[in-house]
Image (cartoon, rainbow, N blue to C red):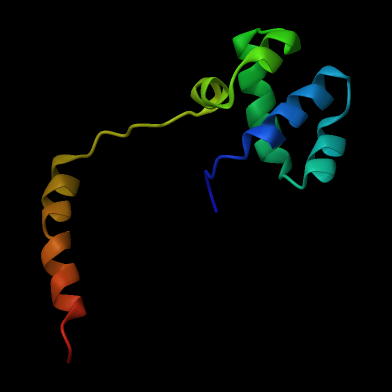
Length: 97
């Protein structure tokens, strides 16, 4: 379940509660999210420096683009070589014994 994005309606509610001055712990329990998830989205919101009124005007797609962080990790040469074997190994593992 790590790094799953939350539903945009929950994100909107999270930001509204935060802008109303609710604590992170309250938001976490109220929306049934982990405290780390709440912290992550609040940090992103604060970095964006957008008023809550502007966030409310955004469509779900735009909101998703603002808050979805995709970490692109470069693969080492060894990992690239290893990944080339995966299709073959998957095929072999699917074969009946």
